Image (cartoon, rainbow, N blue to C red; front, side, top):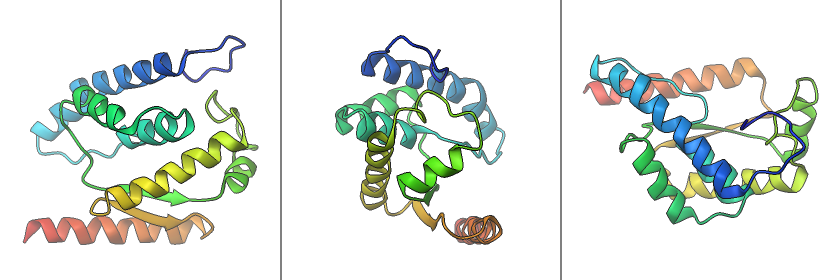
Length: 158
């Protein structure tokens, strides 16, 4: 329902609430129990995605979205968020090789708003965002990610 390319339109608030409900279930069923067992959790597209896609792309109020995320995730926040930055044009070219979902099909202006919102989030939450140049090779990006993860894990162990 959320990501399939359907002809009918979905209200922005409906989309937001469904995304956030899905995140609430994931947090309840997987993330919190894993953390309670002392495990590290790596998630693809967590609460910051809502802030970027629904806040930037859809133009919904950022403060409201932050509060909604806080409620939905039971207060769980990422310790580290990787933002792999590419322009909307580059992102569109890369997505052309896969079947884009509903949000990826919205268009260039939407994708540019999402990117700009991520750039704002980087400034709003500098302690946990780590920006990578998406034009670098996947191997370089992979190496930079693991260097940052190891650096932060070692810092937390001291």
